[in-house]
Length: 460
Ligand code: HEM
Image 1 (cartoon, rainbow, N blue to C red):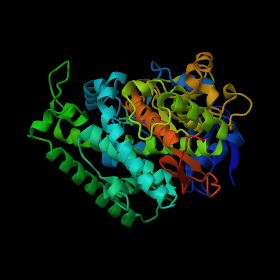
Image 2 (cartoon, rainbow, N blue to C red):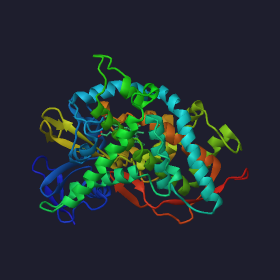
Image 3 (tube, helix red, strand yellow):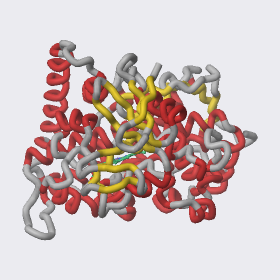
Image 4 (cartoon, rainbow, N blue to C red):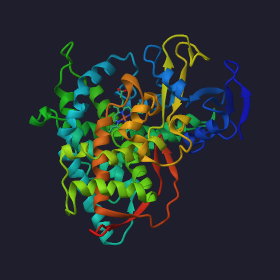
């Protein structure tokens, strides 16, 4: 359904998708186009061109911070409508980016995870209590739904001392529903046919984004002026920490934008990553067996484990499983870079200052550097030896450079602990012989993935 013409700039293939539009799964569509046209192609939609790249050399070049920087493309411009100058959507030269980055960085250093560990464990135990109930009732568990409940409660409590109480609700918290709709609006707005009347969608979006702001203002109000405002978490830092250089603090509007940003960035991506990891474990008994061996060595057949912070660092194979799931389905699947100056990308593609390219991470993660069978789920790709041999830019689930993911250690600590606890406790029954069906709402998730759980016995 796509036409192929030569891009006048550099002989790059052009795929014009105007006739079909990007559909409900633009990332998977772009992956198919890249399989067809090669690892650098231009996607044309209603005359608007986007350069997609997946080639390792080109991505390594785009990672050069001297010549390239993060680009806020049309997708992130849409997210800016509700996250404004929060860290994720701030322009590179917006003063609030550097200010918030400097103030918040220490809260995300590896050592800081020790502070969040008890809260992460508490929320993991909520999920387990809920899964025990479902397992006892013979009811399959909704994996992506429950992962989202767990990551939302974790970032809410660890970041802001706010309890969304997601496991006490039959339906997702209304904040999540509004947020998902805002993200969907950001995505579908990219695909609008010129001239189409979208005023109803835009009005609904404005209601949703006003609701997000209202919830966040309540979260902030619950803390401001109380002795809790000094608390040792993200919101405490935002309310009180002074910038090392000039002694100023973050302003109120920016704090609201940061809280919305962290609630969004901090949970959809991580819950998708854990869902994919469980999917691959349910489908790959040999890998599951190795995770079991690792967790059993740590915890034997104890019924209710309470992992310590240090134990999470010892779960090396579990971590490899997570990395391999993030290789195949990096849940934030694209990031955009822009040229700081006129330059030749990869020595061959001319870019003017301000021109941008989108890195299609799932395709970077399927390049020849990953071997002959990149579709195969194989956690041994992430042994320390294999990692040492691979070029650094071959694996980019968390983006690149100074605008890379600030929450990476947070996500990995939370996800590694939970995966290990689940594998230790349950047999993962793929009762519906699930076929991967990936839903896109700017992030990726295995839609409709359920598992039938049974408790493990020492014989398992
Ligand atoms: C940025 C992925 C978890 C907060 C990013 C970027 C990626 C990413 C690819 C760069 C985007 C770009 O260049 O445009 C992921 C994945 C996660 C995850 C795959 C989970 C597996 C988290 C968590 C938090 C978080 C748990 C917060 C607690 C952020 C923030 C930024 C960011 C604030 C913007 C940083 C900046 O520009 O200064 N993330 N993320 N992320 N992430 Fe994450």
